[in-house]
Length: 123
Image (tube, rainbow, N blue to C red; front, side):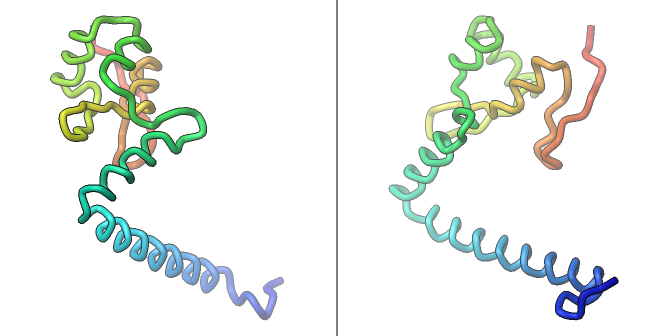
């Protein structure tokens, strides 16, 4: 039974998609405006880095080395090989925590879909 004030499920779904698109566009516009100012950009980067309740989403190379229990050179090799993604923030090289966790679990990190996929590790 469909309620009169909501409409059909397909109309409700379309309204939801339209609202999400409007919200995403508004957030993107705001982010571009804030990122134009170098001081604001630095504050945004710091806020994003520290905002996660489970800890920072981005880790420095020494933090990654500690988490992987390896030397910094090994992390640099993983970054150079493309087995771990990197984010440059000025002179700092940062690595997404989820990518390190995926590497430890033996799966490939896929930022484009926000999920990880299982792959065979090279021997």
